[in-house]
Image (tube, rainbow, N blue to C red; front, side):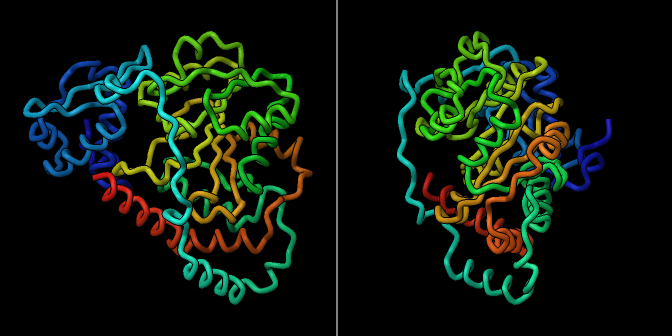
Length: 363
């Protein structure tokens, strides 16, 4: 077997090692309850430093694949067959605790940065800002989003697979139009109230699946007759519940049946206190059955009513054929401001700054 550094030269060594070990855990090379090799043994086998192994093991623990036991090492907590509870979750209250949203001012992008970016966009792009946006959104923003999602979220998509829209509620409606009202839909319970309201406005009555400590309860998941599952794997609002690694893989197994789709509503995971961004379901599926949704309202400003949807190739083609006549609901100027923030690296610097603040506050 080639060493980690040789396999993934485009990734930091600790991330490449993390991904390699994660795949081995999921495949059952390391089974539930088994101990990972010592850091020194892994370092020697992979040709990396012990520090690199420490970082990789810490990421596995952050994601819920393993847990550290003092003076004993790291033990696998991932289990393929069910949605397990990690040791921290076993002592949690019987019902998820409803959590209040953080003040927007703690996470909003700074006004001076936005003002500078707006002035630069007006100066650089000039009359381009007067052109009508394509239905899916301006290519400049979609191209920069595709690059950002690839390097930071593990989502490989073409700009044509991205649809820009004015906030989550608008995108929910596009999902229903794309997949059809005749399908059965299910949502988490509790969930963001606007999700159910949008579905009902399209005469769709979603089935409510109860949340446990690490995601939708397995019995409810496998008994539902729904074909589309709308869920928030990271910090579902208002419960604050995050799906464990096993639960995320359980969602993907549920969606493996023909005709099933997952709508991954990912509104807050970019502000995770983990050492790396939370994994997305979209990046892990082997089938074209996950639709990824996100918004800039949380990461930039509540007044920035801009969201985006990432479609797998087959659905992107269907969208163009059936819904390509829709006009983009976001002004061209705002799209260029967001595209410039991403292209200049300011968006990621802002994200990283907030994550550092949250990590310090969590200590």
